[in-house]
Amino acid sequence: VQLVESGGGLVLAGDSLRLSCAASGSTRSINHMGWYRQAPGKQRDLVAAITTRGGSTNYADSVKGRFTISRDNANNMMYLQMNSLKPEDTAVYYCKAELNWGAVRWGQGTQVTVSS
Image: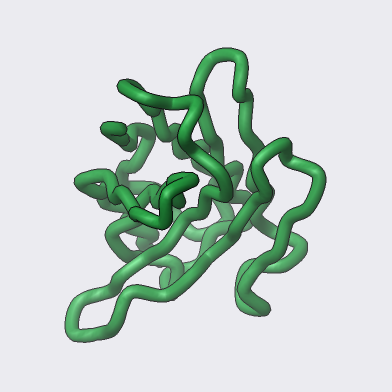
């Protein structure tokens, strides 16, 4: 399984962005997926996660009410809609997939920079 993120960029505080994660390869092996982010000098933290069929989601407290995670299994895509962006949302955002034999795959990351 390979994951490729896109949609990052430089925006102003209050703006919106939509990140995409495209999966390829043995996509039928993908179970839960999630978005993580890592700011300079900090650890990589969970932003949002979604179950295999999208029936359940969970969010970091810092993004609840502003970000929405979704997935389109038919097209092997996952999304993160980010609204009301804040400077503290600045980070590299990574897509993660948990595979059904216990392995984990990460994308290469996409930079999100929010300027005040």
